[in-house]
Image (cartoon, rainbow, N blue to C red; front, side, top):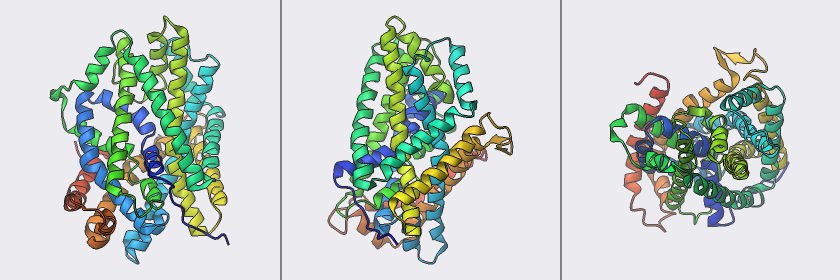
Length: 454
């Protein structure tokens, strides 16, 4: 049997960058811009930031408390705190959610790698119809997406097998600053385009007539999605926190980074889109179909710049996807390592192989093989629906109830105040949010996603 020793992050910077890397992913760079575009721009951003501050941060702190108190993988952490009660199932649901998301998320991450390759060899030029056809052809190809899924999960494995400090923390310290630099470079290039001020106004001049229940619930759902809440990631990473880590400060810093990246992603995309007359509500296709055409048109007078911006954009996307994949992979790796009592390398290999198989089936279901479908949905869409609209809200809701109503408040307070070494001025406010406001908000999201609340 392998001897297991609990790892720790080596520095405060490592804690922030690794955990922020978990939150900052395709949810910020891909999903946030099109969600903002579909829901009124500036108004959506205001509500989104409010949701992150009032609801996202308390939920994040709750997962931190469980992870650090449990000092184990997500399933075992809940099991330790829940004892023989049924609440222990929350941890297993969190691990399962992270595991399933890893499989189909890697497919989208693989598309990003394919687009890097296509940019390098000069395939990212053509008419709007060409880009639409290119993406449709890629998504339904039986080989390319599976190949790139394997590559991105292989890269993730090489990082995870090196452990918390030498793998996750070291990679995060390299990738997160690189991601920010690339983001800023593209933002500057986009904001210098003629007509870019229309996109800037769209993001920062709110039209309050666009506020409705759908916009509020969309912002609420996006805040949970982008912060990696209820996927087991935050809980697993918190198990590597030291006793000196200030959970509240860490959550606030991560939330600020998350919001900043999301807003910068909007500044990267909408000025360029408005510059060439593309509607901001292009939906999920904005990244892979609309934007390559936008960059080509926007920088058409200087083809080299358009080529570089397009290439850097997909490198940025790949880095964002990889930082999130690392945390998702680690959720399952920690689970298998500790529950099966095996080495980290063996556990990481099990996760990599099994999620590659899941990713391959999800990819093939998008067109290459017709039989991979269920209830009229592709396997890819089924995984997305089950995890995103069923498991995430249920795990988030139950975690709030567990922290607010079941776990002894002394344990919660001890973790919140670092065993009395911090003042904990906002503890009662935090507890109020977790007991009442957060569960109610998550319940609204859940019912809305199922079409039961309009």
